[in-house]
Image 1 (cartoon, rainbow, N blue to C red):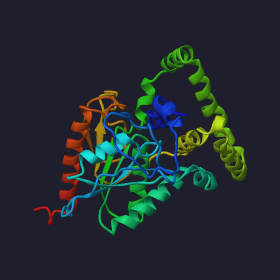
Image 2: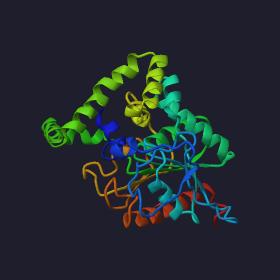
Image 3: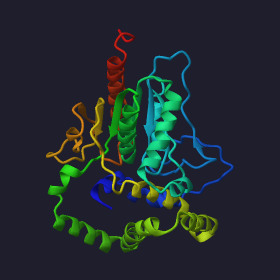
Image 4: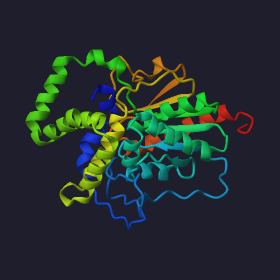
Length: 325
């Protein structure tokens, strides 16, 4: 897994245990937002049939609210993202992009284009020809970027691309020396040997299995693992890893669209825009504070919501100058 994929999955590793261990009850229709639980992103994967997170209501009469298509992290939608959207419910409308389930990912070759295809299809269906506003957190920011480029290639106008602490690491690699990486890996191996070996398996063995194993056999193995009590969480882990693995060989291309980077305090001063400025002439860096994993927790979430709203409104004025005067 290279540094780009590592950044995309930064939220996956610390919370993968919670994600992989989440119980999935097909009879549950929604997960209500409980302020006292699941304050970290990635604690619930909800892109599978039968489980939907409670969505904030659309306030009648506020038709001028811009519609933003939201791309979650690799784990899918989570209570923390619902909290984010709920906080903005009277100011911004959201439509959450549904990533393809793991079975579809396998059947279609497990490429990043499969995720982008699904996002483009949903956006075209729901946007009604209006200017498209996209936003994504972590891995979701890469999806938003690729989707925005695809939409512009298809002739659709993109008026807002919000990257919530999405880190394109290309310019940071020179400062991340071999010895620094080696020290981190040794420390991780000594402090958490079980997790280290499990992660090594997913990084080294799993990608080779996906590349060389026939799709039908890989799908059958996944189905068998899900039905076996001891490995029932395999499906969730498979889903997340398929999405992260899809980024192998993918690189963002230049994009001509207003881009807003909502950045945590975790950044390299040599590349304060995470390298996105090399791909887009219109990148605005908006400091939010906090860390990558605390952006959706109080008090940082309030700053994020306020600045996200201001940016969406600014983009709306640019996209629809006549209607906002």
